[in-house]
Length: 183
Image 1 (tube, one colour):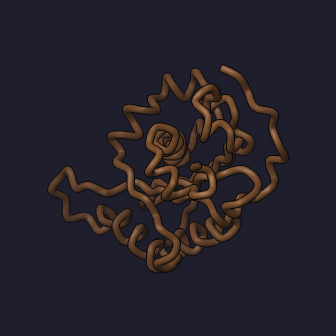
Image 2: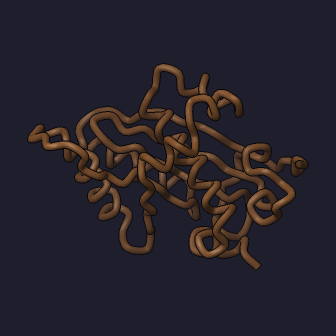
């Protein structure tokens, strides 16, 4: 596969120019986040691979109260207008009465409310992200080291790259999140 000539990675994507961007979150007691931008041709053209055409990548973790974390998530989204947003969908797998158990649900709800109806946030299961982007795969493509010691940032990175894969494979999803890229 070929690499596309890279543009300026600091240009924000507004839906019509610059590079399309995905922001992903792994919400909870500590919320992981990842932002990546990809050259538009890599999204549109099957001869180019997404992972070989990343023009920007950053990840980290938000800490503090749930309100503080949501504020930080909203601030991050505002810095990237036109970005697709994806978050881990919370599925209860255990019988637990801990207050922190439902933190991801509260954070996701507050994020959606804080962003408003026009800023759609897509859901993605943890199982999909963990089977698509294993530690071995992240290591092979050079992103495991960037998340070392930050497990929530790693999970957000898994969601980010999994979502890019879904966008590349599903034209309807691509049209939904990046309408100007689909002809």
